[in-house]
Image (cartoon, rainbow, N blue to C red; front, side, top):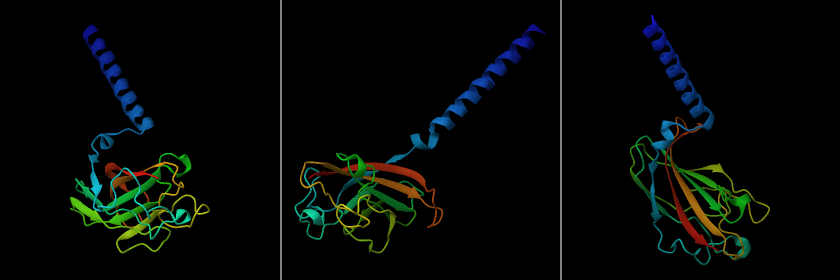
Length: 191
C-alpha cells in the first residue's frame, strides 16, 4: 500500500510539472517552432550597396535621392514550405522608424524555392513591381512622401539602416497570420 501511495504522489508531481512547463511555454510565447527557424543567408545582388554606407542617390527625395530603390537581394537557405519573402526596412538609430518603420514589403515565391534574387522596389510609391505585395507602408509619410518603402532619410546624420528578411508560409493571399519559417538580417549601411 505504501508503494502505491508513493507512486501516486510521484505521478501527481510529474503531471503538475508537465502542466507548469506547457503553461509557461504558452505564456512566454516560446515554442518548438521558434527554435527550429532556418537562418536565411542574405547578401546584396547589387554592386552599388556594400552594407557600410548608403550609396549616393539612394536616400529619400527630401535629401536629394535620385530614383531611390531597395537593393536587389540574394536570399539563400529558404526553408521548405515558404511561399513568400518579407523584407522589413528599418532605421535602428531612430526608434519610430525601427522594426520595419521604413516599410514592409512581401514577394511571392514558388513553394520549393531554396534561393531567390529579390528585385529592387522603387521608393516613395505604392505601385509595386509584379510579384510584390504591401505588408505595411512606411511609418512617416509626413516627413517625405508616402509609399511602401521610404529610403534612408536621416539627412546624413550617420543613422544605421538594415533589412530583416523573413521566409513565410501563407495559406492564402489574404492570410493574416502566416507562419514564420526562416529569418535573417542584413546591414544596409549608414546615412
